[in-house]
Length: 257
Image 1: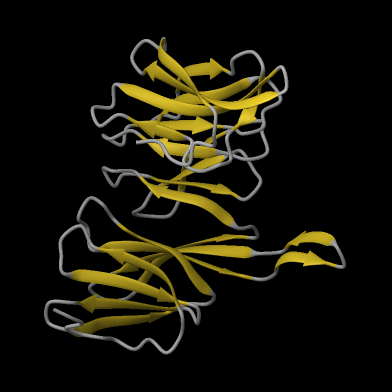
Image 2 (image 1 turned 90 degrees about the horizontal axis):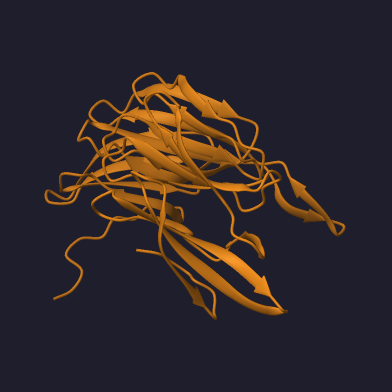
């Protein structure tokens, strides 16, 4: 065995995504180019030039010939010991067959994170260091709903069916950390307050995860009691909102599945 085909991009690849139906692969490079590649026939179908680094790159999970790319640029770091964040982002919807950009959504902030719902009906996004979650219509790029929250950062995860979004705020003023929101209406279904002695939600990795059936939701909280650090994993019933299981971990939880 070995390499059967190699494609030189001429610039570092910073994003890569496989289509729901092989053999198409999309790559995004540091110089702002998206390449749609047919790996089976070893041919580049489209080259789409955009402005800025391509990060991330996501295919429409519904099977539509569409992908979403986030171009980002600007400065992110520190200057003379003072933190700076002047990064901008622009979300592009690209027609895979024609290579045409169908719509753009400009932001003067960094997008982090961005998630397509499993049914392809919504794109959820949040800006860096902000807690509000925006739901976009993939066909038009228009804002469907904005989930208002009071914290300074947010993680979120789609239910397997793509109809409910779970959001968690690592730092929250009102004590409500976990919310379940109906995607089609923006209606709040359940909310859960953090347990006693919890300082904040874990920043260590993927801190929220759905069961494959969509019936249960697991979340990680940092737990500080009597100067002993641990992380608390809680499992909730989605239909009732009741706590079903909890246990402690003495080390950082890097992922939930």
